[in-house]
Length: 288
Ligand SMILES: [Zn+2]
Ligand SMILES: [Zn+2]
Image (cartoon, rainbow, N blue to C red):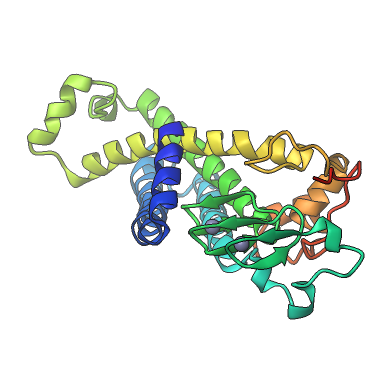
């Protein structure tokens, strides 16, 4: 994960346009192909071998899987479509009021004053309101407006990959014949790929390996995001506690007025308490 982040940051700084052209489609494709693969292998291959296809558990599993995929892809799309760019503000809010002017700072790239907590992104080529980080999986910057979608996208990626992993483990326990076909468990069987192997088993093995990776990746992403949500900080300013308004205040500032209910669907309306230009601090910001 660290190597991936350092590598991405290096390429993004060296050549932002090429970064957007190559890394964005690859990362988005990884999520889309991975989701289709997990879903197909899990629902059409693994689940019928575990549960009675006419039983209640099978139907509940189908409903849960559809709910998770809807929220995973829905939040991913909503994160991409809801821009947190300073330029997405109404024209009159892109200029500070006289009483706010001392809190805004000048961006050399945009050649304009930008609100507190806004920082420039070389890939997006604009300043982002309460910029958290540039996300390759949603092909956009995560900031004030779209943070909620990014957070739930990460949560659903983790829930989905955890449940998928649990299904793999369940199948491993109950079906010895399938267990013998898991390449990861019988490393010497890696060479099975060189021998004829059914498409189903190849998909099962690939999905198992990607599943482990997705589970760890989403856990690390959550490991960064939960403290940021809890303390009202950002990925790049994890020790700036000036904006901490308490758990409920921070939650509302990030998720909007409906708070936790945004967990249910990206389509739930949850207006944010402000437009991303007015940040209350516990103490007056230091002036340089
Ligand atoms: Zn800028
Ligand atoms: Zn960006």
